[in-house]
Image 1 (cartoon, rainbow, N blue to C red):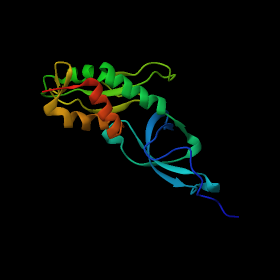
Image 2: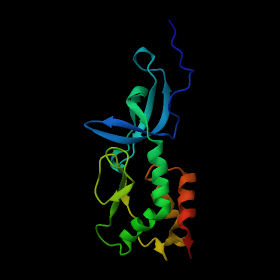
Image 3: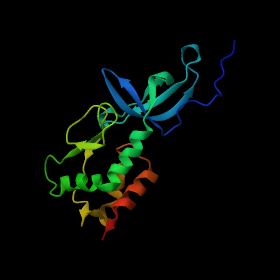
Image 4: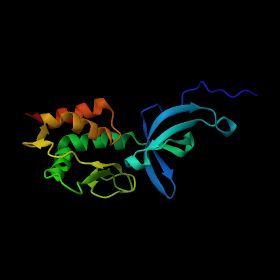
Length: 173
């Protein structure tokens, strides 16, 4: 009996998914479709938990253990572009020791708006240090644009989404 691995899976590389990770649920990013390599031909995916940089290790998960999280991803872009990024960047106008780290999260039922916290949160993304003095007149300071773009990538966003957010917020010389 042959097992077909050519059929298209439920997820593509770059998709976000929601999965059980230990006792908690995590948002993950699909980095590879491994095909039907699992027991009985189960489709496997290599995923990276999008949490903090300390947890960016690749994990293999069967397709049936993953749920789409694309609504969360779109909500993150909308939140950051419509004021959330400005509020986050305001958290680090002074620099110095113990600079703030921010996690974005959605309510536990998945029906609440996106918000940010200054401590790790279940189902959260991010955790990197907020760029120092990257805001001018409630817009991204042009001299820090690249740093802000790199920071937004740590939320698991792609370059097109990052550019969309920066365009929504605007830049200031």
